[in-house]
Length: 121
Image 1: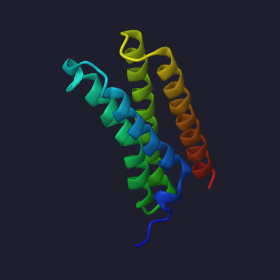
Image 2: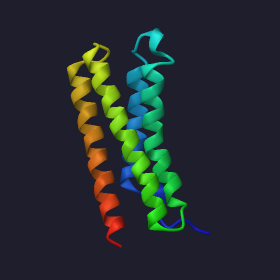
Image 3: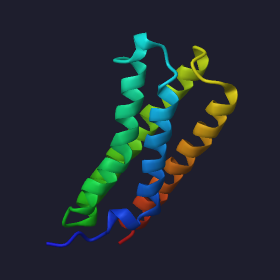
Image 4: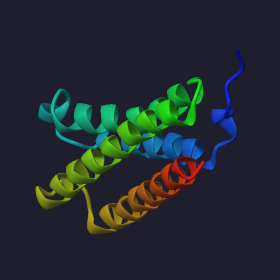
C-alpha cells in the first residue's frame, strides 16, 4: 500500500529535519555533563518531530495520521520547553534562543494548521 502523503514533500517534515540538524549543532556546545541529560532530551524531541510525521504518512486514514501529528506537536512543545531551560541556565545565547524559538513556533503553527485541515475532511 502506498502512503497517502509523501513525507519528503511535506514542508513541515523538511522544517522538522532542519530543526533536528540545528538541535545537534546547538547541543554540541552544551557542557559534557549534559550529554545524557538536556542535550539528549532535546535531540530526541527534535528527531521525534519529523519521525512522527513520516510514520504517520504510512497510516491508512487521516484519523490515524492525526495521532502521529499530535505526537509530533507534543514533541515540539516539549522541545520548546527544553530550549527555554537551555537559555535560562546560560547554555545558549539570546540570539540563538530567539532564532530557534521562532523556528519551533513556526513548526507548531504548521502542525496545528495541518491537523485542522485533516480534521475537516
